[in-house]
Image (cartoon, rainbow, N blue to C red; front, side, top):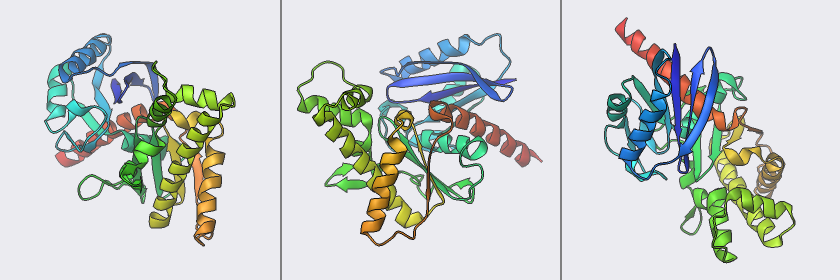
Length: 296
């Protein structure tokens, strides 16, 4: 038996087949503009695996996901997926049992089950992409909160009305840089970091501002929750200098505020961009185990 896993993001939808304890045949497609287009493309992917014995489909999604109700609340970079019975529609479209969980929570589940957080009790996760996703694990369990907003670190306001998601996302930073430099063509976070590596001062300043904002967000969470481990994920976490830059900035903030006795470890996700897919699978499997327990 295999599980078809999807990670719905603001710019792309990743997918892969989970079989025999590993992901395979991973690929992606651009995020469709409408829900009907999304369903059609998901069905096209599902039809690529008609010869497989599929146990179900596991989804990682942005937004405030009510996994039990099968509804996504809140808001996200995919506006058309919210406030309707999305799991029901996905099951009807794909002809498979479907589970769904928040993308940052999926990344956390992957690392708690298989990765860098498998030996700690309390950890916080910052997943850096089109925005900043977050997840909170206390006593090795997801803490989703009373209104499903637990771990929504990206919504923190850091400067005026600007949130952590706006200030620390490479996508948003690249957009601001392109506007400031009158760059009209497509310009990505990767392009911004490339210019910074080439010594372009304005790009280096933009990257430094991103690091400062992310460090401030992490500092705020550290002094409130005091976790053992902070984990960085998403595409930006692949930047070699990221951990060192963020660690230095966070420790400076701790020193400036007489909080140097606060101890923490900073790591990057072991599974990088596959974390959401693996976490979606872990959630699907836990839902199955939970359903079986209820039957007993």
